[in-house]
Structure formats: C-alpha cells, structure tokens
Image (cartoon, rainbow, N blue to C red; front, top):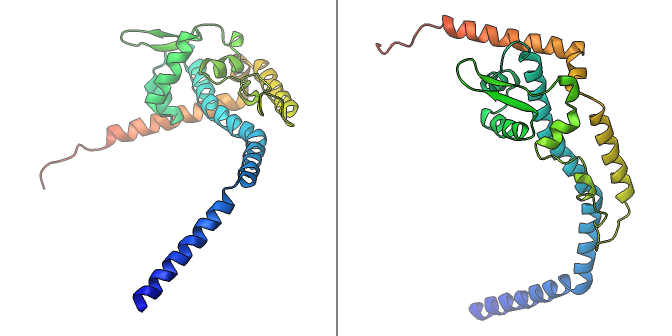
Length: 213
C-alpha cells in the first residue's frame, strides 16, 4: 500500500513536471526569452566590449609609456617593464610581439639589448597602440556594421556609433610624447624607479640561506 502510494505520488509529480516544462518552453516563452536576450545584447554588450578594450589597451599603453620614458638613453627589457608596472612578462611578450609587427617598437639583440621606440613619441598616437594589440576601436559598433538585430539596425546603434567615434578621436589626438610631457607621468615613473631600487638593495642585503640547522 505504501509502495503503491509512493509510486502514484512519483508519477503524479512527473506528469505535473512534464506539463510545466511543456508550458514553459513553448513558442511564446522562447520568443520572450529571445527578446530579453536581444535587449541585453544590444544595450549591454557594447559596454562589455568597451570594458575589455580598456583592459587590454590599458596594459599596452602603460607599457609603452614606460618604454618611452626609460628608453631615451638605452633599450629597455620587458623584465624591467614587468617589474615596474606589475604586468605579467608573458603577457608583455604577446603585446610587444604585436607592437613590433606594427613597427611601433623595435628590438635590440645582445648584451644591453631590449626594446626601444621605432619612431618619435609624438608620432605615435594612443589609438595606434590600442589598435596594434588587436583592440579595434570600432568593436562596439559590431565590427562597423549596423546589423545587431536580423541584419538591421537596432535602437541603440547611433548611440554606440557616436561613442566609438568619440573614443577614437580622443585617443588619436593624444600621443606618447604628449603624455611624457605631463608632470604626473614623470612623478609616477620616478616613484616606481625608486621602489625598484629599494627592493634590489634589500634583496642584496639579505643573508644567504643556510642549510645548517
């Protein structure tokens, strides 16, 4: 009796669940779900793309400012940039490989080698640096095409197109040379150099580890 009761309860709930899922995943629900997705995609996806752009582009620009500041007298190694800017060395290698392919920097081999600018810093715009590391400044415009919904423009196309143009124009008007002239850049660079010098001094003063207990 108990077994039959439990069995009836199980099948009854199974039928209820099946009925619920059937009503849940009907055509109208899927249409509403698609509408919610497109609303999210059309409005918030450009913001996510912009956030990714600023993350990758920021590392590249930071490293290039460091290089421009310190390579005025001699080439700079990626290890030195990584230490000052706390950026992964392997990540810097990827970025500088792309910067070198775009003739923004050049490498110097041998002892005392490293990287240096390939052109005058006033001839290198921030937009060029960002684009060189595969961060297209028009990525928030769906690759330059107004086809975010059924190959047709969506409600926010004009908004994101305008934002993309503003970002590109702003970054094209700023060069590495312009940034190097700013007092804050010089102040921060000197502070970072001092920190590295202190760390090296402390490391050299540390007594060697003894294996004897």
